Length: 290
Image 1 (cartoon, rainbow, N blue to C red):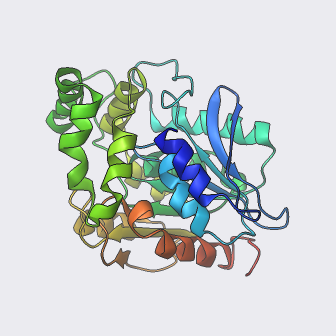
Image 2: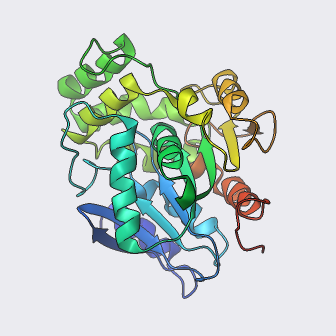
Image 3: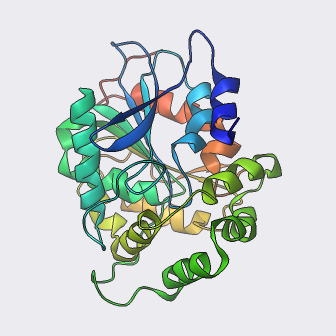
């Protein structure tokens, strides 16, 4: 049995069964909920996948209908057409998927690189977004597409090519966690990355401009970060929280989560589930109260 299959088996129950699906060339995990509740959409980071959200999907109140995608080029999802896509390209593919699934306005949760996708989607489709939760957000480097990648981003691609996915993950994954009990799951996800998807995601990170998108949002927005995050440290996430437009800002500072590193949804799924429930109940989200 694969690692993903084991994750799904251990979280399955009559009320919270998670099933796989595919639509518009995108693979996803779905945990059905109540039709009256606001949907929740989960967007993973650059070295991750939909299955990384299984602990969070299990922790969320059963009323929520939850979708976690394998981003374009991850898992069995088809890659994007551009070799150097923007966050808007991922947002467009997400919009097509959610339209196919006929979901209503959703709480969109972006982890790390997924934060760039979530903010871009919220900016381009404001009528389809009830709220945004950014977890350990990557801000992007703002380079011109087609130009020179930042050294740290170029090094990712060089290391993956030189080491191969498994060794790449073995060396890199430990930096993402404070709670070592989730290290095997984090390593598994990172070892599954492949080209061209990882290359496209890396180049999107290079040209991403999270703060620009956040300044344009009017829906409720919340930012959270692990207190021991070494990848997108608290000081960076605090800058992100302050960049949220006043119209959407729920609080002036970020939510700092003790006992967690960069893999926040896996390390503290209970806390993240509570943040999603609070965001859904916030005035302006039109979510269903518990």
